[in-house]
Length: 173
Image (cartoon, rainbow, N blue to C red; front, side, top):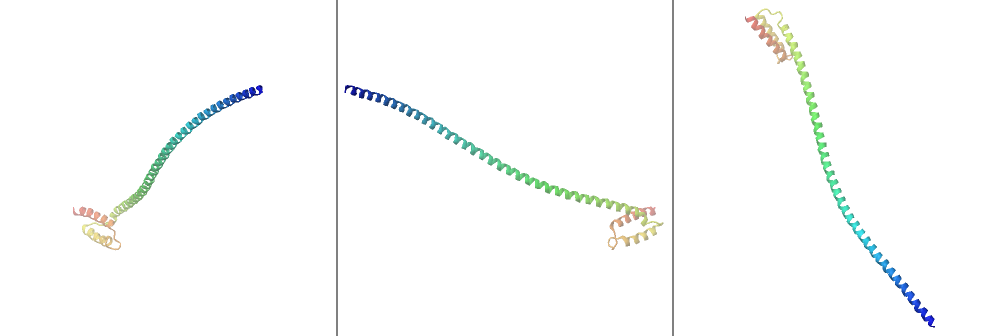
């Protein structure tokens, strides 16, 4: 029995050694898990910090983008308004050009008409040889071309008056 007790004690010692080794190993694993947990916790805090920084950066970028968009919209409206103004000015300029073309054409026609009348001035008093005949012809022409008459023409009357004055000075000498 002595052997049996010795073996039991030896088994207890072996078991206690194994148990101590297991406890030491478990304690070591616990310590490794605690360290790993601390590392994971550190990494989680770092990620949270990185996430907060990213969110602040993102908000700043969104804010900048929004302000740039507003600025772009304002510039776009200004450009559209200026373009409308330019189109209006172009239209006004075209109207002015058209008006001045019309005035130039009218002046050219008026000059042609006046030149034609000036050429005709000699015809009005053709064959007049004396001052008396000049006055009679002048009275007859006034009756025909006076602007108050139905077929009267102020431009032609002016030409007749100029020619009459010119010829009158010639006959009075």
